[in-house]
Picture 1 (cartoon, rainbow, N blue to C red):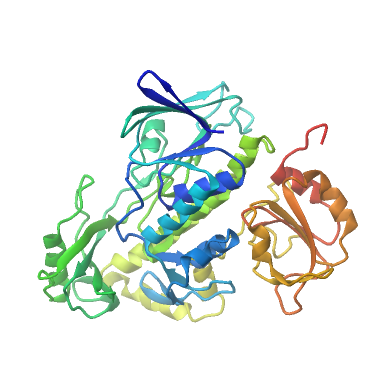
Picture 2 (cartoon, one colour):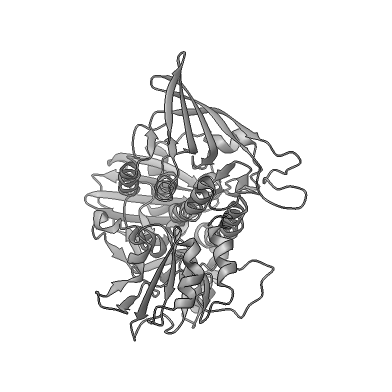
Length: 527
């Protein structure tokens, strides 16, 4: 457990994992680590959840994730909009899901929800704490910056991380097995580690303001002669966003624009005067596009905007970070518990770096369509035609919603007959009990944060049950029948990771032991 004691004037904490940053990614990671049995300390400079209305969209996959942990009841029923966009071109985001479309949830609500859950699970959240330094004490010579040895194997041997922070009551020293930087696009952890962060800085930007006391017609990506204008009013507050064609991103050095800059650009683009309004929040976000070369640096890992910097086009940034954390949490907890080797952490990089690279690429394309001048109109017209074709809309909607993710769960050395669900998320579907009981959803089976071996032949699959028995502390066995009209294959079995992705599928035990070992660890000799 986390220990807390004094050494002269310094508070000393010992824990399994130190998470730096209590935004959506850091808080989701803390909940998953605690659910997996790891002790966690979270430090954040802010006094509480954000009060700024930054991200306001939860996409379908993120909603499914919250549902799989039983968090949606607290969230209530937020407004849902099935229509999204790709670079300002209208796009129907509806795909098969328990929560299709995009759900309007202010970031402050998301953070409050995750903070409550993390606290209930026992995470140690330390507000008003600023990270000053860190030292990774890796006892593994000859390893590269991603923590691999000369043979390309992951792991750093014994060791840990020691961090120094300053809190409201003085200095704090935190000793942890691992540290995860979830501290945003200007990450202190990334700077201290000197992690390579290739990409490009912002060349263009959108100005954004939440304003009360103005009457502005709603605009959905309205392209005018001199620029792009967006406006939407909810509960008496109007959010305006504007870009003037050809206007470069300003050098701001971390400062936000003033309201006068927003009103001036808005007037030049739209001809309207909103200077009489009261600004509640003003900021600018540019089209910088960067991604860490490695998400893992030995005992230090990164998630969320600390790992990738992008314009939040289509509401993807927050969702990408939450899903990073959801992928990492159960893996890091398993390594901390000793039930899995450190090579499991390498799959975090390989899976999420790939997804991040794909998201950043689609955002770069969207930025050109959004912020480009008249020269991009032919491309916009062509995309509008293509979206109407079979498969195109579904592909783009899958990228933006996160529902199209498919991980390489078998590894490059395995070449099996590919099952359509392998590497994809377990569909939300009804199950009929094999022996009495009541119907239940597959999503309900993920609430514990453990793995799942789901037999869909209804007879109890004794051979599968026996094979999985040594992993019973990590993997639950369930034998049910799929609903006749559902998406699950009757007569087969699925091994599902704690993050809901299918790691093995088959009608017999072939390959199951290998998958159990790959994702849930090698058993001890006395297991």
